[in-house]
Length: 186
Image (tube, rainbow, N blue to C red; front, side, top):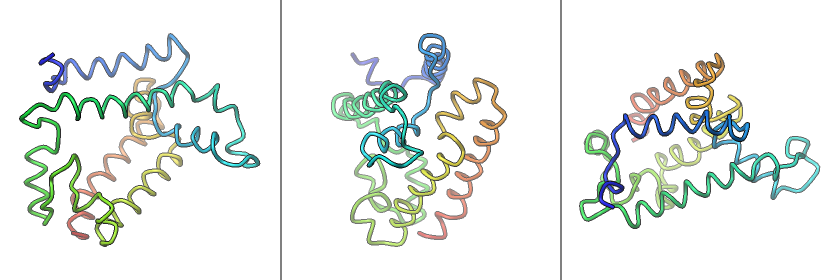
């Protein structure tokens, strides 16, 4: 059981993730992605009449919703039962050092509570990180026709030019937020 609680090296975890893409495509004709689940959840719960949400979400998305529930459950099981006494799961030491230099001090959870928590919503950095950032990620994923997992894992594996452009945009956006925006708002 100890092998499961340790971080897996990239040469094991990466190919396992990479094998999911052809397995999904060959076995079920499905493409890997997570952000489409927001549309499925809206289609399942929103009132009828919106053309964008008027489709058979059960046929199109139950497998994907099941996958996301499994990811959430797996994350919870990992943090709850496999974290061990050393607390291996969390923010890397290098990231903690960088964030401390910007004034972030609370690292008691899986994310910096100074930025991502209900109490942080009363601060400008918290609003920018959670509300504005969440909206932009959701809007960007919808506008780009997929999120980072869909484009970076499935799209690049299928040699899609649009996915390459989207992934380059994701990295540029991440670098901009890390090196320009975050130091400005903190």
